[in-house]
Length: 421
Image (cartoon, rainbow, N blue to C red; front, side, top):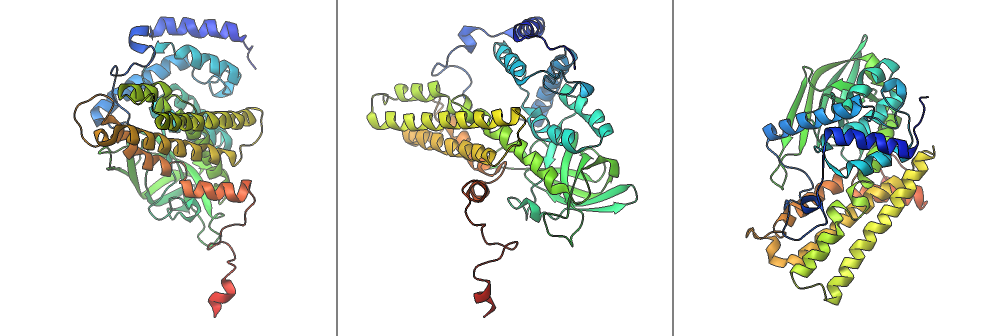
């Protein structure tokens, strides 16, 4: 293992890197929130023109390449795949320093690095790890997750996309849906049905696929926000080498769980975990002041409830993250983190709607009003992403509270005998 610099030494290294490659923020433009100033955009899903998106991706890739080449691309990762093998504390130092500088948005790598890369690290063959992980963390390769299907969204084990063995290759046919970033992804993690005769959880296999290969067609899905952040992806005789299989044949459920747990960790511990971003306390307080409601006891109480919800979620998420960092396996508490996120989003939506009233529905050009419509229209999508609210409640009920398993096609119903008569 390489020598580990102290946190102070690492902070000096990171600061020197940023001073040489980025512009420091200034208080006038990047300081505390001020009502009526700055970009008035509250969209949960960025809706941009494809050409503009491509330019932003090139800038983001250039920034990640600089980070990686300076030894800061994968701070906690294994050295054999380009990581520094440093601690989470070192990564927090990096994030703290980065917050003082202006850098290109890097959300395009969120799914690949937050969900796909950890699964490749856990389940892929060594040469596949060596091929993709350094390039993913350098920004040269962007990953997508291909799980949900039109007939199997929340019930992942019910998926029907088929992979059939053909010598040293697999041939994939089927459809996936609600795939974020498929339009610019280079590789994808896909779960397919490889044995229809086995119970549905046991006949699945995971693969790493080339999203640019013949047999892959990506079509945008238009949302009620007006944009198309998601896609449906069709596979027609897509050929995948067997050495790009993730884990054993028909053992894809454990592969999927690895991805899902990382997905809920990265979503639940993201902007919804604290009062930053969507739950920006300063923005909500200033909105009350602007509309003369900051002394109203009812609105003050509503704001306190919103704030408390975000703070509790933040502390619970930190407990879950500390458990993972200590080497323990993540558990159903990550389902709670994701569920808390969407509940907090709904609380913010209700609060904003109550404060704004009709201003929310009419685009008068007034700063900080109609922009909330994009946020509110995006919340239903977040309630589906990473597991629906209903599925997460089911997981918490069965695995945390110990409630009986919900009757279904895979369980014995208490009414089975009655149905026979």
